[in-house]
Image (cartoon, rainbow, N blue to C red; front, side):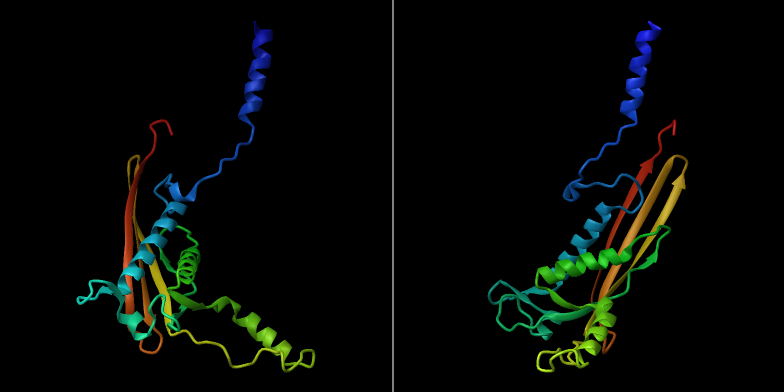
Length: 214
C-alpha cells in the first residue's frame, strides 16, 4: 500500500508546485483587499472624467438641450463645431499622496489625460518631453539640418490650466478587521489667476476580515 501511495503523493506535490497564469478582465476586476488596487484606479478615472464632462454642460432653457458652459464656453470650445478651441492643460508631477501606502499616483493622472485627449475634452502639454524637445531643437539649429525643414524655435504652447490632486486615506484595524477609507480630490486651476475652475472628489471605503486560522 505504501508503495502505491508514494508515487501518488509525489505527483500531487509536483502538480502543486506548478505555475498557473490567469488573464484578468480589468472592466470587471474587483479589489481583493482593503489596499489600493487596479479596481480603484478605474473607479477614480471614470468618476473624475464623468464629473468633468458634466461640469462642461448646462441645460439651455430655450431648447432643453445640453450646451457647453463655464470654463469651457469661455474658451470657445464646443464639441463638434469646426474650429472649436480645446483647453490646453498640464499634468501635475503627481497626485499628492497622503496615504499610508506606496501608490503610483502619476498613473491616475495619465489615465485621465488619455481619456480627456481621446474624448476631445482637452489638449495637454507634455511636461516630461521638455528636455527632449530642447535637445532636438538645438540639434536642428546646427548645420546638420536643412533650415527650411527644421522645426522653429519659440513655438511651444503654454498650458493655461493645470490638473492636480490629492489622495488620502484613513485606516482602522480592529481585531481581524481592516477598514480603509480612501478619498481622491482633484481640481483644474488657471495658471494666470490660480482660480479653481473645476473640482470634485471620489471616495470609497472597504473592510476586509482575516480568516480565523490565518
